[in-house]
Length: 114
Length: 116
Image (cartoon, rainbow over all chains, first blue to last red; front, side):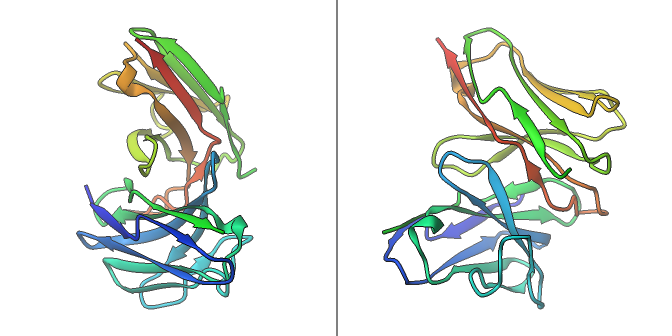
């Protein structure tokens, strides 16, 4: 199984600032995704991180607010821009191995915006 | 049509009992149905998954039952233990080729408490 490391694990940020979350996978993966889990809620897909090209965003999420990079097969970043208290959530990076269908999750980044 | 509806929202079971969580979907194009377990402060961990070509899959104390005609699937946890206390999510997606089960649509989650 792929091991996914996310940094930071948690942060408290001020309104109007931006935070970049890093996701590192210990092996090459085909697909990487970013999910959001609002307090006490389920998981919602933000976007698919495409290697070497622009991410594919889901309805309700835009690149200006959540810019994503994926420079290689094992690394991706998600930036939460111009933050507001409504952005307080857990942000989760996920990855899918090249040889199987299982989707692995990192421990997430707990973000609180004051 | 993209929703996955999960019930119950919370569940309390005595140690040794059977925990049952149900999910329903509308999109008949879904063909991959995983269950995830999440402990507080942790990311979800894949428990077990099923494809529509089988009606049941068992791994240890965890069993998925799948009813294609009813568009429903459920997770059964046999001999439930206090260590099973966690939030459980069902999900669904459309298989898109080797190493790509596509985007997961998650249910709302069920908080399970197993009493000693």
